Amino acid sequence: MKTEKNGVTIIQFENLSQSGLVCHGFSTRLGGVSQGERATMNLGFTRGDRRDVVEENFARLAQAVGVDVEQIVFGKQVHGTEILKVEKPLPMDGVLKSSIQGYDGLMTNVPGVALLTYHADCVPVFLLDTKQKAIAMVHSGWRGTVGGIGPKALLAMQQAYGTNPADVLVGIGPSIGLCHFQVGEEVVKAFGAAYPFAQDFWRKDDVPGKYKLDLWGIIRRQLQDGGVPEAQIETSGLCTMCDTQLFYSHRKMGEARGTMAAVLALKEE
Ligand SMILES: [Zn+2]
Image (cartoon, rainbow, N blue to C red; front, side, top):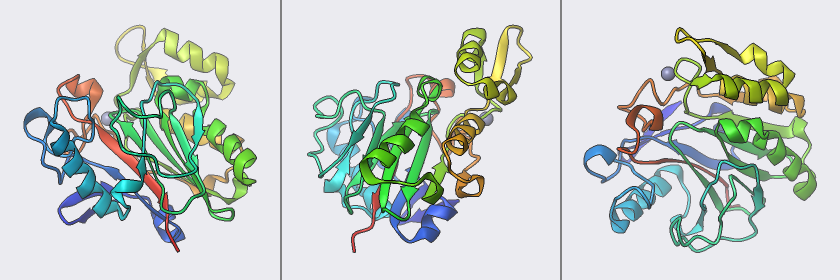
């Protein structure tokens, strides 16, 4: 669902909101101070914006989501499947100087620590264990999805926090949908080899040799197979490429764009 706080528009999930346990949100283009092709809520430090502009956007997003900007944790993502256990807030040095390099998933059970992943078509997956009170934030593009980063995060939570998948709420956020996610033969082959069920989630495109792929459906199925009840998985259903007034889309805009972020934090008592 779309909500606006102090002029900042964010996308939230009903299940996570109703849990009362977390502050969360997915940013849109609306409510920031970036200009031109990056207008207005660019959160990327490597997209050509001045650092103070990006920091102002961070401050506005943090306020809208309800987290302390000093407790935001993020790093450089590599389309991999590694999950980092975050024990304490880390200094926000920007992506290039970040001590977190090479992780596409972050998890924590420390209240207040705000996990952030970057997105511009790739799927954000929010996970909340309502019993053990632990969270994970995942960047699941097609490579990460083939590698199973969603279920890997679930498994990492089981090992680190004793999470039972039956207690986990999931939000699958704005990203490129089946309507627009055109891929080649090599991509559907990779999915077919990794997950026999995946063939239910692609169809032939009008363009010969191309397919349309449903990453949301695949991630949902992966997490169900990992033990999360279907009714606890909510999908925003918002395609970033369908609505470039609201979202940045890498496929649609190329490098002439800003970057969005997904934020998830356990509420402090
Ligand atoms: Zn679309």
